[in-house]
Length: 102
Image (cartoon, rainbow, N blue to C red):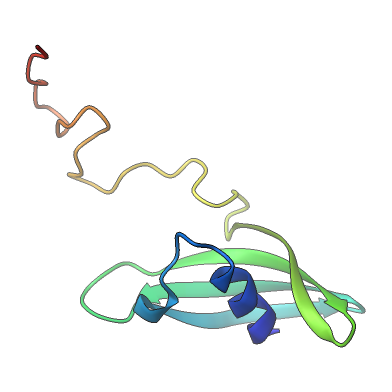
């Protein structure tokens, strides 16, 4: 099951798995389908861990990711705001005025 999740993550060009520690936090298996909660945290430095929920299905003796969602039920990144103090899309921090554009 872990390999199926790692294969899925490796197929994403926007992820560098060398910098992420991946752990399976829990698994519930139902015949040929399973739900896994996976924890991610940076390998180096400080950083918050987060969890994703994956549904996998057994295909030919191996587990393959069928769908994914935030551990709370939201899909990858949906509903997640920027970290506290992070400049917004316009380049200002909360409470600051944006610089005039030319």
